[in-house]
Each structure stands twice: as structure tokens, then as C-alpha cells.
Length: 399
Ligand SMILES: NC(=O)c1ccc[n+]([C@@H]2O[C@H](COP(=O)([O-])OP(=O)(O)OC[C@H]3O[C@@H](n4cnc5c(N)ncnc54)[C@H](O)[C@@H]3O)[C@@H](O)[C@H]2O)c1
Picture 1 (cartoon, rainbow, N blue to C red):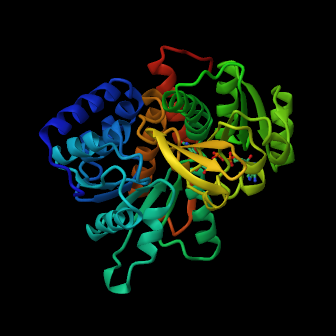
Picture 2 (picture 1 turned 180 degrees about the vertical axis):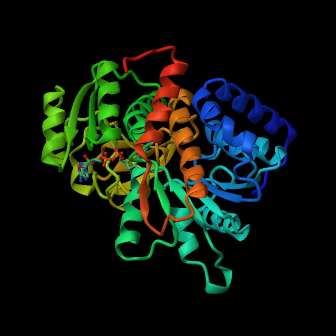
Picture 3 (picture 1 turned 90 degrees about the vertical axis):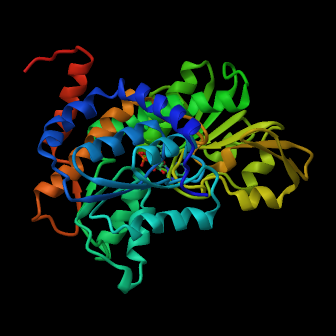
């Protein structure tokens, strides 16, 4: 079953959506005039996103502005079935269910594309990648789209440099009102929240090893310190490593950090950050989590290869019993820890990201001259979102 029609689930999903709507004044403000003008009238929008209450609110806002919307998840664990059911009830085309296997996940993306969207909203790049791989007889013209996350932007840059980008794409991730808040504060807060919920273990006094000190990693490191953890950062970029050092964190290579950590969290966007040699040195009972987009940062093949067996002793935790007699606990299968069965980032943070998504699609529709390139969000739109956010907080600034 991929399209969930269930009145009880839909009721629960609708009350979650109503709650976040009250905390998303920026999206409401920047979309108001577009809704009046029905800016997306006659257009179909395909979305591949973490299907939860805030993205549901974005889908409903796009629909209010005239679009027909089709959506699927961008991670098999982050889809919330009650939200999917609520959206089905609202008439949004939904192809998603929590915990779907890999084949089903890709089939759902394909189903969104079978509806021939004119515009897309992508998170991680799987929707556009699937569009590119369609057979010529399945292809249709795409006007353009928005990409939400760092990993997706890396993939778009590769497509752009090899001349394989099929349409203009707006780079939402690198807008200031996105990465400075969503990646940094949002990932920081929601990763710590979910790690605490999943493990029910005290953070204070524990050693937290954070892989990567970019937008996300620095947010996680600061939140962990705020909770009383001793934080160690690993990096490959000398400038980021210096920043971590001057922000007061210990900086070590992973091989030296591995024996120290009680908790490990990766947020690099790169594969193989924690691998066999590290697992072997870790303390008995260490927790492993990933906050980067794909399930590649903790090498699961390596972990399995040195484990005698593994078992799930608590929801969302797989415990690996190693040949050396130690146990390691893997959270959320090594997928985005903050989104696996959680609510993800705070609503008032995603409000800014989704206001940018909305404005990004509007910009594409209003600028038919754009070509198949990756475009930054114009500074003016970034500032529009910042002003709307300040206003919602009752804050004023000088001219
Ligand atoms: N969990 C979430 O909700 C969420 C939110 C936003 C972004 N993301 C994802 O998190 C990842 C990181 O995003 P970001 O915005 O922080 O990117 P970023 O580019 O700002 O930071 C990544 C950092 O990792 C470092 N790095 C790369 N390889 C490394 C290695 N082998 N060891 C140690 N450090 C290494 C880089 O030098 C860089 O400083 C991406 O996959 C992104 O898509 C997740």
C-alpha cells in the first residue's frame, strides 16, 4: 500500500499540520500575494521531500497558489504515514509510506514523474536524477525546480559541469536564510532531540564526536556542548578545523577520536567517515548516528563484517555484537537520525526554508528566460525572508 486512505490517520495528520501552520508565518506572508494571483494556476508540481507536517504545509500552500501537487518521500524512514493520509484526504497526490524498501522508494519517485510535473521540489537530488534516467518516450519538458540540501547541490553542480542539467534549478541550500538556520540550528536541535529520545541516555559528561564542522556539524557540536557533553570534532578542511578549535572544541583525526567517544554523529555529506578501523577501537556501548543526507557516512558493510550478529534491542537502535566482545549501537539504520520517525527540524526554522522554496519556484515561473543552470536565490529574496522572519518575531532593525 502506498496511498494511505485512513480517516483516523488523516485526522492525526491534520492536527499536526494545523499546529505547524501556526508557527510558519513567513511562508504565509511571502505566499499571500501569489495565492491571490494564483501564480501556479495550471501547473503541476512534483515534490520529493521528508513527508512530515511542515512539508505538508508547503504542499498545501503551493496548491492554494493554484498548483496540482504530487509528492513522495526523500528518505524511506522520514515519511509520516498520518501526514501522508492527511494529504491524500486533502487531494494531494501522495506516493509514500514509512519504511518502504529501496525498490518501492524508487517506484514512488517514478510515480510522481508519471504525473508529468512542470516544476519540481527536490531534497537530495533523487527526483531530478530519476527524471534524467527516464526513457526518451517517458520524458516531458520540465520548466525548473528547487533543491533543498547540500548533498543535492553537490549532485546538481556535477550535472551542470557535465552539461547534463535538464532545466534551471534554484539553489535553496546556499541561501543565507536556509543554511545559517535550517542546517545549523535546525539540524543541531533536532539531532540532539532524536538521539536523546531514541537512547534515553544522559548527554552531560559524555564524549560526543562530531564528524564534519560545516553548517550542520557545527550546530550539532554546539547543541551537544550546551547539553553538557565534551565535544570532539573531526574535519578534513583546515579552515573548518581551525574554526572548531577557536569555537572551543577539541579537534582530532577520527582514528584518535574513535576510542574516546560515547556518541558519534556524522554530518559531512561524504562517505566512509566511520569505518572498520574506527569501529574496532571504539568503547563498548558507543552510539553511532548520522545526520548527513545519505546512508553512507557510517560504513555499514564494515560494521556488519566485524559483527558476530546484531539485534534490535529498542526501536530505532540496532546493536552490533563485535568479534572483539564489544557492542556498538547504530541509530536509525545510519540514516538521517533527526528525521527517522521524528518530527525533524523545528517548524519556525523550516518556515524560512519553505518560504525560500516557494519564492524559488515563483522566480522560475516569472523568469522564463532562465536556462539549464544552477541559480542562487537572489539576495533580494533572501532578505525578504529575513525581514518577514524579523517581523514575525517582533524585532526591528536600523536602515
Ligand atoms: N540532518 C538534516 O536534517 C540535514 C539538514 C541539512 C543538511 N543535511 C546534510 O548534512 C550533510 C552536511 O551538510 P552541511 O550543510 O553541513 O555541509 P557543509 O559542506 O557545510 O559541511 C560538511 C563538512 O564536512 C567536512 N568533511 C568532508 N569530508 C569529511 C571527512 N572525511 N571527515 C571529516 N569532515 C569531513 C567538510 O570539510 C565540511 O566542513 C549533507 O549531506 C547535507 O545534505 C542534513
